[in-house]
Image (cartoon, rainbow, N blue to C red; front, side):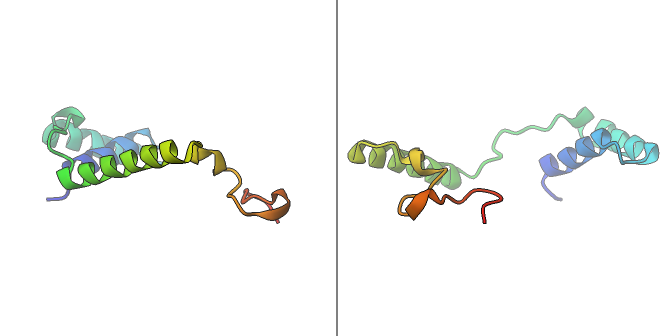
Amino acid sequence: MSNPGNIVGGHKANLNNPNTSEEAKQHSKEVLDNEFNGGNVDKSGDKNPQNVAGGLKAYVLVIYLEHLSGADINQHREQPPGLAGGQGLRAGAS
């Protein structure tokens, strides 16, 4: 079976979609009520511990590099360093 959280999320999105027919919304409501306890899904154990550990290691590395450089790494999000003339990568820029 597919991931129950994804199934529930799809049916909940269907219920809130103004472009969905009433028949489809009724079906989603019935599925949630009959098969998924009204849409309540147990999320314990959902995450892969190795992925969580990898994310935490990456976060710690960023904090460590910020500390070493004495600068805020996030300061260059709008305009990457090294671009001349203040030409950042912004939406709609030519």
